[in-house]
Length: 478
Image 1 (tube, rainbow, N blue to C red):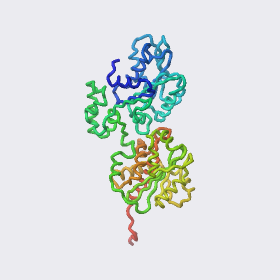
Image 2 (tube, rainbow, N blue to C red; image 1 turned 90 degrees about the vertical axis):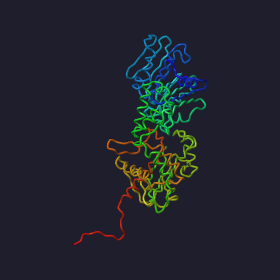
Image 3 (cartoon, rainbow, N blue to C red; image 1 turned 135 degrees about the horizontal axis):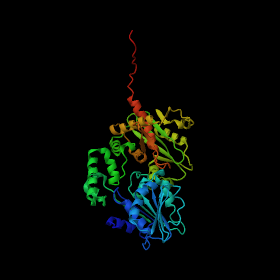
Image 4 (tube, helix red, strand yellow; image 1 turned 180 degrees about the vertical axis):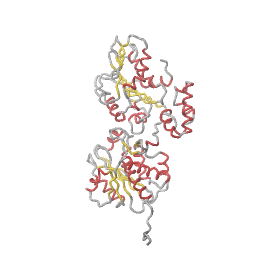
């Protein structure tokens, strides 16, 4: 296999002494599966520097089926008719063995259980980690990463894939690429400039393989032109052809443009009593409250558990170091010192001290009793979070953000922005939508965004009611 210059540069850096983890992120169609198969073939070839006689390495893919259609298919092509290899390929068992040395390459599905207990594995070749499904791939990655450094078990991890479809902020693969190279880690990322997304030199630069072939160039230009004509296709083009993960507008609570519109508006004054949305957390989740006044002004507060500390929570949630600490320093995030679970009374006290007595307090109906136990005397309104009700809240929020009057003071922008970036909206077949968690480990801190949707939904319902004239009476005329 003849490698292109960008492939040779990556392998030189990835296989250098002292590198345990190497990641290469490219748009689709740039030979990622072929390069992974090339590395696997080198491991199976006696005399190659990557060959370890009698050892077994793994190709980890989203599923056995995906690997058979991509990397394993390319590996079989590289092996060809060479009878020095034995190939086993079934629904649940896929591997290649070099007969003379017993060296083997096997395929593992992205399953946290099957990835446990990796010992004496010289290489793990990760194919398209952004497509790993189970818990966003976090369980699998944790199992593979913690296998590094086992006594008498040297191992290297090489990850090759596009950031999409799951590589949004908060996803481990996105964070690994975003953090770049550091001690023991090498990262090469080919990503386009989203501000010049339809510029051909920009497209060509981050598609080094596709731009070399006439048919592939035609495909890129065709998709670019289609995205120019239909903005719904722009997100897909950015994600898969420029390697810039961009969620479809139907999957984000607020678009970047709408949030920027909120920040550009003059800060409205907090006149009267606010509507407050509350999202009470448990376990690793935060408890959050958002206040919204009739003027459209919105402010946010949150309370995080004190155990583990914020630094450990940042590492667990895979956010850049210092993110949560800066929120605490700004005063928008408080910590329940010495507690694993923050009590509802702490959030209630903050609301009273910061915003006074609310006009209404919206909460999930399952947490109504927790707020009643605080004996505030507030007007508590339980909210049923079915698809239709949640969709009504989200539509109200989006309209307020896009057309006004939603505005936000600088003191609350950081915590709202961080939560909106983590919030994921899922549509259903009936055209409704609601907030859903990313994966199953509850690592996305969308708690503030959930409280924001509750408050905005009630604000929109009140705004839609006809104004009542004082002293007016309409009756039948006899």
